[in-house]
Length: 415
Image 1: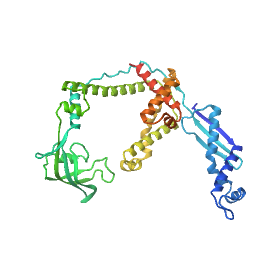
Image 2: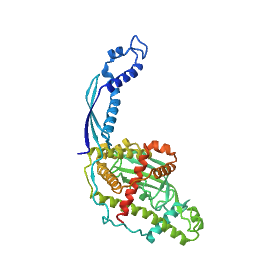
Image 3: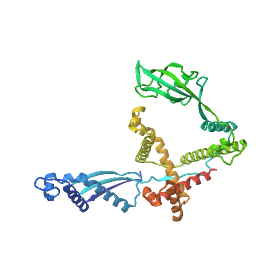
Image 4: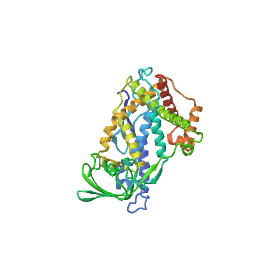
């Protein structure tokens, strides 16, 4: 591939200086018999430990120096970390071989008038009623159900004990547990099995753990002994002025105005969804006209970014990625393989959007970029200086602006 560049680099004087610096540092941390800590002559240190003991702590600095020089001399912009091999190393020199991958060449192809149809936003009466019901459910009062049995949507306050193979299920016991019927919080059949029970009644549920459950429990038979302590139900609010105010719609006075507002909200939400779908279909259609060879290393780097984000998202939910692998029976290797098609699509789309920006000569003056940086910083609740420190440079802000404008051009060219 034309975007794969190989270079050999040899450091001599720089290498000797790096070794000397490393020796001084290690010597200060070392105690040698007959000398105070850090006071042994260099010759004594080398006699005791050998110059080879300095290589491991010196090689990274040597690689950085050589790599930076290669990039500057050849005006290269790498897109992934380089592959580096040490081909020779001794007290006088270090020889390195770099394989550097830059952005692949792209033949853009047609990206206008692709025949992609944008859906029209329509809102049905049924959708309006469903949304109104959802809002009423959200603001409903939960009250004790004095008479009657458990129904779908009720909250059953229960005691339960689970047994597998005649033994108490670890973690399968609860007291005064509030379970919303229909929430699917428990395994299939549990909530459905409580419907019709009254306060004070007990029932034995014979169920089976699903296929996608914990490895040690999936497909196993389980028995739950359940007692109903209380039943609570929701009382929906009336559609009136108080309801409107509770929703924050202070300017709405009538039910007709309320329904109009609900419709507008749904239209707004569906408008975003339609736009997102249209953009995705435009990208998909334009990407079919692109000619580009993407290096496996670029895909691999994208997958690792996705894996890091996936692990971070799980952490925010209180889950550890290794525990996730254990529970789901998967592994990093399997997840890596599953993510590769999406990673390829993301990379191809990114290069497509960059190519459109270049083709359309998208650019922004420094004043606009600075203004955008100020807006972004305000949104994050930080200073512009902190934002740039996080991003690395103002060029990242400009890049983001160019990508957004290129996406707008793609949409506008196909509407």
